[in-house]
Image: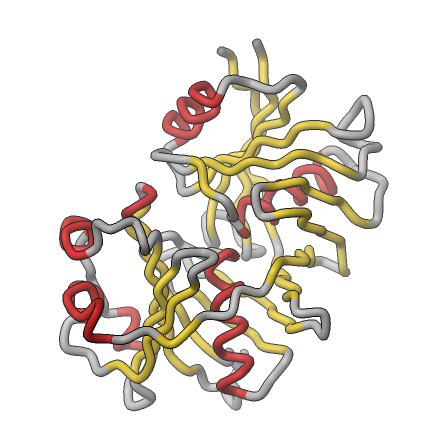
Length: 286
């Protein structure tokens, strides 16, 4: 069997920045263990598998199945690999439709082109206030002695959000060095699958980011995810309320870095926009 495969850097317009995803175009459904083995072989934060739904090819269809796997497990939502999947269909397969629909574990997700960016229509996952005492050991493992302003939790995505105190600048966020072993040791209940750490930005500066973030998810086999769209469904809801803004620009402060545009819609969903660069095209032979 031969499977077309692409590597796409998402949420960037520069090769080797943003978040890489492997994208596979699947003609017929595979066994789940084969999906997982391919993702383990790729060994990056996400491998996405696109299957046809309403056409004979990837260039004319508007509706596709989409699944995401980390090297360790399948995940219910992945933003950067969705952006990368749309980039392959729009840019590499020259898909003719104005909007693509992906059928996923998180419902239908829509992606459209706008100038040089892609805009994803995602569910908005509003977090709830979390008692810090209940997760105090995990907080210590993530941020050490850095002061915390808020802690929230999204039960839908199982992500914990930690907002550093406003007295902290961006360097306090970038200097964090949590260890996978410590995070796994202090959260083994299955309640939390990822930790978002965020701090308020400086929108009056250039390019004027409203907030910064980092994301850690050793529970799914990724210590730090370079840029994650799924976490920004939680971040968008949180910061929109705190900043009283519906449109925001965010930057994820990983080693690779990445920029995301966010717009809270009146229907309770969020538009996440970003750019993508395809850096590798080939054939997977299995």
